[in-house]
Image (cartoon, rainbow, N blue to C red; front, side, top):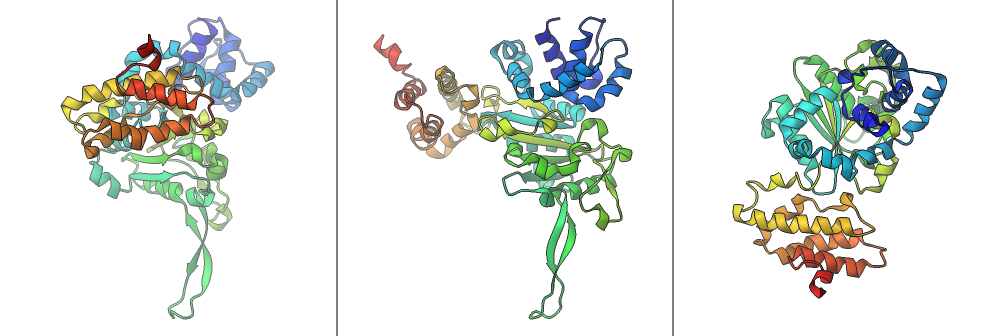
Length: 386
């Protein structure tokens, strides 16, 4: 097995399903295992894979350094070579039932991909499947919670914090004081602890837009699937001195789904310690086109499919862009409200998006013209000249 194959195997296989057949590549296995799951797992791996991995100070040190290169490793799995080898799997990803199965095993997942691929919609559908609730009942249930991260979102919103409240009967003589209030995630987990037989799904939209370390604080460890539901590994929160020193842990019936856009620049700075605690699932524009079924006229779907595929293929050919800049199928859902006028879709929705993608490019005008040609079914300008 090559190093690339070994990396791929360890990064795409659930920890409980990992199996090594012989003693070859002992050091490489140790390095990659620690890089993915963290140096704190060394003792656990020594017991689990006795004689099959070799740990030493150099391996641990190298693994810690490798963690900072985690994004590059993930980039390898997005390469054409790996994607071509996993076509069958990718075709099945855009099904909430398959994501539900993945979420059950992994506990924490992040749906990532180009804008408009339906990641938020999929997260909600997966939550509906896992909880067994209908879409309408889900929104009213405490088994489901939805938050969106942003720059102002912090620990007090997510875990706990002091909030100003008033306490006075007289309207003109209100007294303001501060009270310790649970944040969205802590409150959600406490509800889940009271109903251990039910599944609870917490969705974090735009998870990469928040300052992860500031929001999660000391919860980095207890959010780890390996510590899920283990009260003995509970942590003291920042205001635990105000609630009798009670420790906090995440119950085993809590599942977390995050979503992120690959082109967002904040993806590059996504906390590496948090990365290894989530399973990343790419939602591509091609396999997200199933969202059109029932939402677009059946006789228009072939036309929309041809235009979207041609447009995204041309986007991949532009030097400054890549597959992360593909146009998602949700943009084409606008067709119904504009009477399937593809020119209006281009001028009012697609062109402004692509102009933003190409901002600062020396060949922006030429590239935009090429994209219009293929979208409009005319081939590229070069092909027409030929």
